[in-house]
Length: 503
Picture: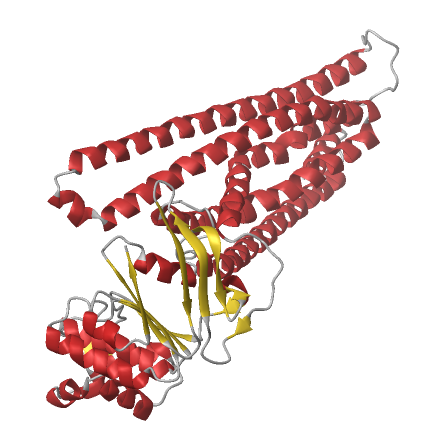
């Protein structure tokens, strides 16, 4: 584009209308070409950004709730990273990457074009790249550190906010608003400080590129002017014409233009790279290994297992659950019952010891899809009662769903309500009693028909009659399976083949 404009100026000076029209046509063609290239690069960048974010979601989301050994980060921090850091990748792929390609190619093309008119001017442009690249490398290192610290602060603030919102009833109940508000204020101030650090580095980077851009144009202008006037302080290596000088002078500002645009998007690079580091911590790239599915009721073994939450460590625990038997784990609140169950599922950090399933490390066994799970709280989705039960096995037919519901003791409710299994439910399970919610969880376990059942307080908060009913249902359906249950209930413990009391 700049070359076409220069050609037009030279042609006009020479009074050649035909050449001027040709140059104007070249200018228009160059402008259209540049626009087409920019649109194409933008579209390609957006597509690359969407693909990168989709790939990271597939990789990260299954790992959000799975604690790596020794990982003591807040759940809210992990969730914030999984959401916000993936979005941070958009700018890197959609803006920075296309501009980086342009910043690599365009200056070289401009320098080569300028060389045809003046090889000295082309050499001057290229020579300024050496100190410029060194300065930007130093600034880039500082920018990377600043961006990483900023993302750390943002993640801590997001995690703190999410976790404290989850605990808001407790905070309000104990009058801890001021103390928690102080924690949030401290985290907010840290974000502000880290953001200022990023802006300082960005200012330095901008100053570097503006300095060398101005230096390049000034040196080229001085050389061309002194060459035309014949007052160079050294023997002239070449003799420039007015047209050649104008051509070079018009090209000179274009030399650093792509790099100036790149500098404007340089923060996207630092944020994107720092985001990848955060995401790698959640879902590290590791060679995929085949996991063994459960082929029957497994044997479970906990060997000297310590669950390490950082400030608090629970254990060690050693226990065995024979294949095809039921095991009840009892103990006081806080003794580690649910933590052991969560550790088996990878939801609690193991500081020491091993969990074996059929003499294989638990990490080598494919548990998802091969277990029946009933937790302390039953999760619901907006939909019908049948939809919520079918979560355990989506391909199950209506007859199978109804059979599981009736086996779980939901028959009277189904018959009493006109909608039956079509009863609409929201995400809270509104309209169901506490006992009915528990029975929905049991119905899912029954529908799954898995060789391993993991039950976490399935009768908690139920009246004695409802608890006895669920215990009776589980005792009948659990035969021939491995059942590992955590409970306070003596009735539920009574149906187990073995029992252990934690201190």
